[in-house]
Length: 52
Image (tube, rainbow, N blue to C red; front, side, top):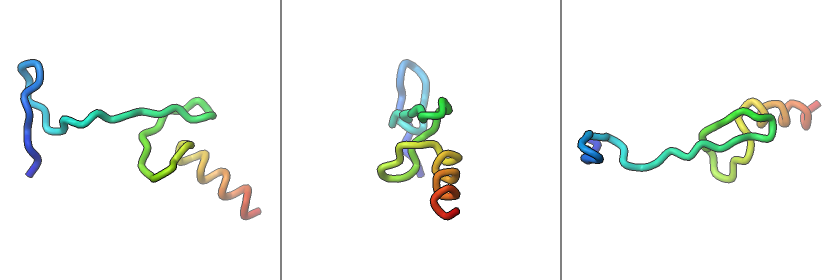
């Protein structure tokens, strides 16, 4: 079970901060993989170009 913390008079479940990155294409993404530098659609598009 997650611990709850009190911040500014409100209870929060996750005290960690989520960092939102911006891709070269202009869309924003949350980093989900190690060494990720692009959003998932750009990663999928680059893999399709490499295989073709």
